[in-house]
Length: 382
Image (cartoon, rainbow, N blue to C red; front, side):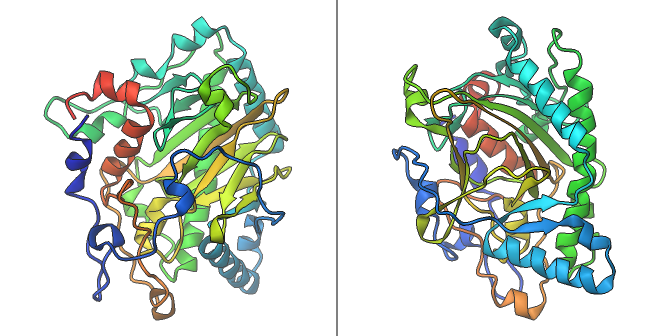
């Protein structure tokens, strides 16, 4: 594991066209967020009373003029904030509610039944993680969760690149058979929404709607987490810290968060303040991932965000869907229109979290850092 950074250093980023260069390779570009790099701060719920923008996906089909206004609003929200509420997405409230209900039943299972499908058993990073076992920026996150990906077989063989082991079977708890169909159905519904929105992003950036299709076609990265944030307490250092999940960015194209009615998700704003992503009925919270930041040469921003653990007497439940590129894909650099290219200053430069051009390598980097126990058992040769 000591060689982890050097193992990933070679394919970090690629040179941009027309004389620009990606920040992780050159050291130029926007400076990293101060909050993203802090390692000892206790999260405080001091977010300003500022609301995230609301984007209604139904406007995409409301005629040419409204479509143009929608694309402009989408581009502005992604560039200026990097987070927004998504309404008009077409996923039924009953399906979302049913998903959170089955998630709650999973977390209510006895510990032994959850630990039977613990992530430590999976080289593909699938399964259950106890509170305090996942790490963000070297600190434990006070949440328990269950991760799945697409139901595909593992094609990795000895001698293949390590990132090929990311693909493989999910683990499913025998005591809750209804979890599998509920999560896979939601995965299918969310994939449709995500690809529709990704195509809209391509248009908003002056591209063909299918510009990203070659790097996700056939085998997109379809990652789901169901997550329970226990109340903040004093049972452990992780519980007392208030870090539900520490400040971070997401690595894929787009992330979609389904929340219950308990807040805690916060988005970093200019100047280091935090905006509360207050739960909004019927809406997903959507954020931009590092793939879109890379592809747009920093014109779009993958925004730092965190979750503050609930106060005593409360718990928080959420589900997250992440759409990413195929593991074997290389992130393209878009040929932006001149007015957008002039404002694209390169991705954020963070020496502690270098952006990698290769999707599988970038994703594996994050998994290894977040789950050191899985890394030690299954990837110790790195």
